[in-house]
Length: 571
Image (cartoon, rainbow, N blue to C red; front, side):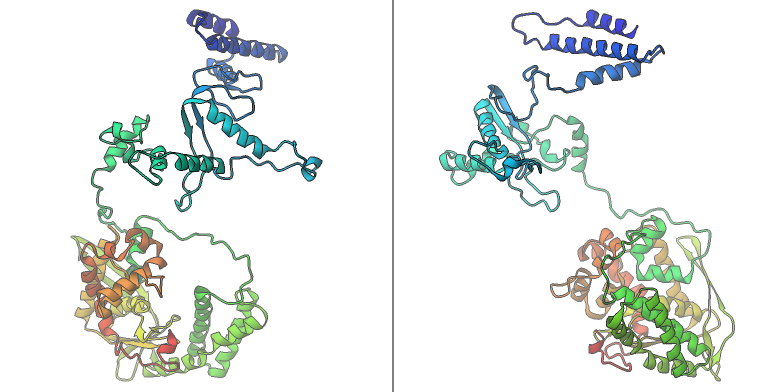
């Protein structure tokens, strides 16, 4: 039934052009449609198909048969002919377009089969695909009567560098440049006039010039015009503020410390839910003979935690060494240390500062010999932008002496001194806890110990600590509405050395190319350079309010006192 209806539709709506000036294309198309119906009818009869079929199924099959190619298709059967370059097709056309004339793609190369013995014994007269393509290129040139269009990929998709065309196209361009030139011009002006470099995107503004007649770039895709003209309008503020973040639970000290250390990353993670780091980093295929910075820090941190437990249990240095060796053996069994002599040398290097750190840790605890039982509750509430914001947490490890003075000793796995300066960014989390403890039980001194450098944060008045915490909470609320223009390392250098040193710290230098922006993908995304970071004018103010008090609390920052190596050796 469908075959009858479709043939009747063809007869009612289409009439083949039988005039002498036609090329017979309409008749050939109608013949293809009728032949497709005939083949479909035969297939249905062979399958004994008697079920009713919807029009969508019939139409899909019928029209798809019309699009199928075959060796019997006519070469010259329409207004536009698409074909591959083959010998004996030098038929004159008004316009000839050669596409894909890229270097390496044309002339075409074909690897011979393993059983092709002619490839091993070439003789004059044997067919060569590359020589055939040279001849076909010449035939295509001779076939063009009015216009010859040659297209190739002129730029790399990786770095936008220039890519040469096919060697045959290059020879043609060299021949034109050697034999002809524009009137009143010299050099490659002729080639520049004949070559059009198209833009990467279809919505480029250059495809929609005010005077199209004077531009070689044009497009038939006018649907891109609204987007192209919209691109000319001024862009909205990339850092437009979001509504204030409503929290159902209080902030923790860890969250506030992480925010102050990396405020832009905190915004991306907590507000946008975006993490640029991979959740499943690829494992190394090669055996490591040394640890990178992160791996070394992780192993050292594990040893330092073992040391803290040894001191808490009242063990001496000899017993602590035994615990370190046991833990190192466990780490090596996990495969986190190299094997053989490389692992032995690295283990000795990791254990080298532990004896001195153990002694300094014991001396620090002796300043406050009485350990306070339990943990101290931290609760602080501030009014930020008309809304209450609460900070709540628990902290332990407080100690006291006979005079009732309180202290807290903390072991830091990272070095606190580098290049004769205290690393303020390593003290930020300790500073936040230090401020919170001033409001819970009275003044308290925090002593932070590391392999290289110690820092004592003095006790503060409760009003002063509350003022600093108010500023931090206000900054957190602002930092959850948009990326806060603050980078910790850069801010400390700005407060210490000035704007020029801060710029070098953020962007890097020729001798130290990795700046702070390269170490944080979120920071690089929000503020790609130092000008973007400081453009709003908030950077200097935020650095002074949020990190200035910490810098003032660090004693003798120009000549940090510590045991062991000199500050220059700590770099």
